Image (cartoon, rainbow, N blue to C red):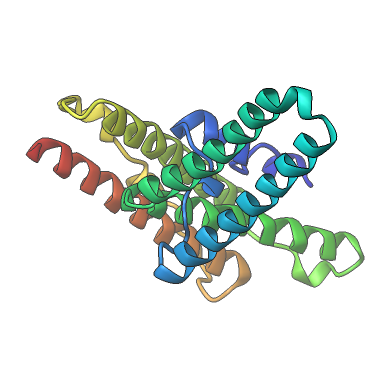
Length: 215
């Protein structure tokens, strides 16, 4: 990975730090099929835990209270995790932001693969106006980080009213100013995709602001 795109990707660990939950803690998409699949998986795990408890009690009967407590805690943990996922999956704003992060990281991955192809001796795939594409991605990253932090604040503080306009400041004008001559080129397509993603991130920010103002 080239130096100019190192650190641009938003990692799972960073997501957990920013919004208090990772993308694996929600159902995406939040469909009945996914819910049913997870419930069946949890039921299967609970059955295995019960069998494990039964075997251990049979082998070590004197410690039956310990085994009961240990396996009961494991079952409660499985049920709590499913309940948390179901509750978190009702937060459409958070899920939409996770989807935006996936798309953003996908652009970074596409650039990385393109760089590897170029380094393999295919100079014709070189991304022109690369600096503008990277600048656009840096601006989108700032907006995504801001949106994730804002969503967490609003989620954890239901009565919070965002009156500071700087909180919802965006980099959209910066992105619109990044004009390139050939919109059909590889860099043009990358920048257009980045701009579309930035617009959608701003729409999510506006929804968060409007919902909080109405509460």
